[in-house]
Amino acid sequence: MKNNFDGIMPALLTPFTKGGERVDYDSACALAERLVQQGVQGIFVCGTTGEGMLMTLEERKKLLDVVVVAVGKKINVVAHTGCLDTQSTINLTLHAAAMGAAAAGIITPGFYGYDDDSLAAHYKAVAKAVKGFPILLYDLPSCARNALSTKFVLDLARDVKNIVGIKVSKQDIVSFSALAMDMPKDFALINGADEYTYQAYLSGATGTVSSTANVLPELFLGIRAHVAKGELKKAWAMQRSLSAACGLFQYGKMVAYYKEGLRLRGFDAGYVRPPQRELTKDERKAFAKALEKAKLI
Image (cartoon, rainbow, N blue to C red; front, side):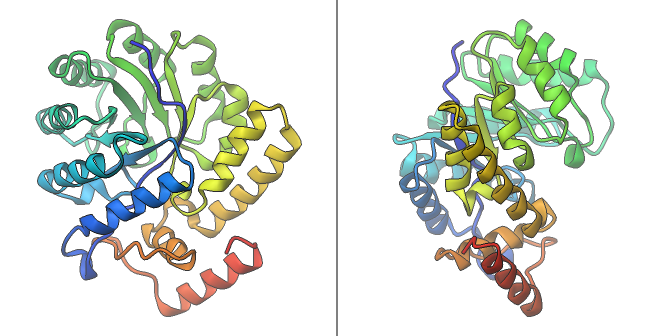
């Protein structure tokens, strides 16, 4: 099964109303439209940055529905459908396929530790339930606990036709490169570690899913374009700016930093959902000052 998941795909932030009480679906669609206008090739809905694991299954379904309607004919909309259990994951993945998502990204089930046989059975059950619908593995052991080895990914990709790629969100360029060397033809190797964007493209990445790309998509688009043209000095200069930005956003420590960054760049991305917390007044002030000093706003 040929993949078409090249390019920059922000991990779409989910705007909530004050206190995280409700999903602001209109604002989510507006953000998706903004990113389309900025030139991205896709978006990843209800992922880690999108606070998907803090949302109900019905909220996740509805958010995917409205985003697919808003931008699904313009760019790839990938639904994160991973859950702690197999049946809920199948439920969301069936819905994603029915609603016209381009693919489902599925993080490893977490909390408990699972061996490779358990993880393989999980992914095979989901893939079998949606035959012909593209599945992207999602490796984020810092959050989901269970890491996917290079051998595991390659074996599963060769055994299951509709497992067509992986989003790698661990800071290990060595294993990323190992996947690039041996992955099947047309397998989507998607980088999820922003600090390695430049290196990932040099190593054979086909695309990027990123939290920071909600706020600074031009840096990712620029790195990708410059590497493709062989303009490595220009690409490296943009990576230096991106790496600095990752430090200022504290790279995933608090989703509120991304929402504040967007606000400072002219878009209100709403509130976070507890137990995520909002930034204090002092934190917002220091953050704005740091972004101005780095010439990011």
